[in-house]
Amino acid sequence: MLDGMDREVAPVAEDGRRRIARTDVLLADPRLSEAAGRLGRGVVKAAVVAAQRRARAGEIPPGAVADSAVAALPETASGLRPVVNATGVLLHTNLGRAPLSAAAREAALAACGATDVELDLATGARARRGRSALAALLERVPAAEAAHVVNNGAAALVLAATALAGGREIIVSRGEMVEIGDGFRIPELLAATGARLREVGTTNRTAPADYAEAAGDGTGFVLKVHPSNFRMTGFTREAGVAELAGLAELRERGVPVVADIGSGLLAPEPLLPDEPDASTSLANGAGLVTASGDKLLGGPQCGIILGRADLVRRLARHPLARALRVDKLTLAALEATLRGPRTPTDEALHADVRTLRDRAERLAATLRQDGVDARAVDSDAAVGGGGAPGVVLPSAAVSLPEPYAARLRRGAPAVMGRVEDGRCLLDLRAVPAARDADIAAAVRAASAAAGEL
Ligand SMILES: *Cc1c(COP(=O)(O)O)cnc(C)c1O
Image (cartoon, rainbow, N blue to C red; front, side, top):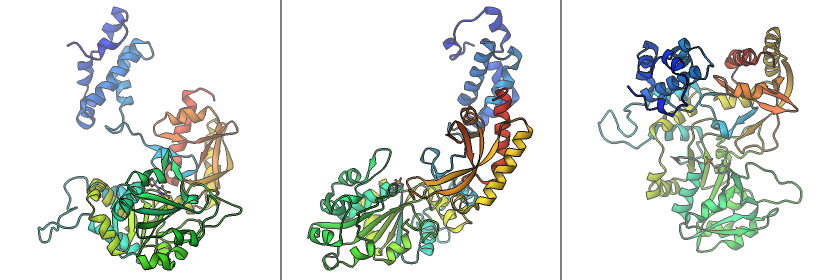
């Protein structure tokens, strides 16, 4: 059998090639054929071909090809690899923001097959999609009359703009025309819906009267955007939700205030006094609140819409809602996040710094016994994910020589720290305590592979 992948490798000495087992022979190894049944033949074959290539290059003995391929097999058929987030950034955008709780993972797993997401099993009739996740949201936010869930926070804004202000105006402060990250600019997103932006005020100061003057028959809604990732200080003025909702010019015309709170806090969080939350925004008179599910709420990626029943209904019944709807896994994970125990994000936010220091001391001491230059140091953690800028969460880290950073990143599991002043810091605030042993093992493996670092 001529193997397709084999033709791509550089020609090597005949005798070297002959001693390396052929691909089909290797794939018949019970460990590899079992893996092919689990992961797919292509994934296993790629590991086999890579191992053959290493043998031809003289990196491993010809007899070790099967073992090497088995060792290199990925855990799953997906290229996404699990990472221990030791960056000290709780909601790291590049690491997928909020990690799901065990309850959310289990719920998503249970919903993987056929599930009653849109069916009433008691009657056999069709039922409202995601009804139990929506009920869970309303239980957590009694100030909301209704709820709807879409794919992410941006989709929630797009749906609100399209359904409530299509061809009309959205009044927004010049101080809130923000870029949230990765080139995602709120004004451009809103303009893409066909709604017109009516900018009011100045970058640093916008008063309620500015909104009142701009209100007219063509106004769809007033938008309050929480500028999540930056803070303005000095000579500033912004109009709060309560002030805007109280404006006679808006009330008389029935113009609602839509508050994009960003982070998804459902109720006030004492540790983050400047972060807006859904309950307070609604109590202050917002008609709608939009937020992300995978920031401080600590759940799956989704966009949460809470507020007045008539407004939520207009969004949920708009044709665009179908294009933005979430899948059953998201609904399951969201509901379990809302009903389940404290999320990993919440645990990380509330972790006691003394406990973090103890963990860092213990880890560093263990590693020193193995000859690793490890020490426990104080560290500054942050919320991240574009939330709570300026808030420093006191934390503790294990400090290692800088070359560990790259080696740990390439390990299994990958451990992602951060480099500071020529040292690799593994910040423990976003790491569940149960993973400390994994970190120790990863550092030992990196140290063994590198000789001495
Ligand atoms: C994060 C954020 C968004 C975007 O939400 P995604 O879920 O990332 O789409 C919109 N507005 C604010 C204020 C945010 O913080």
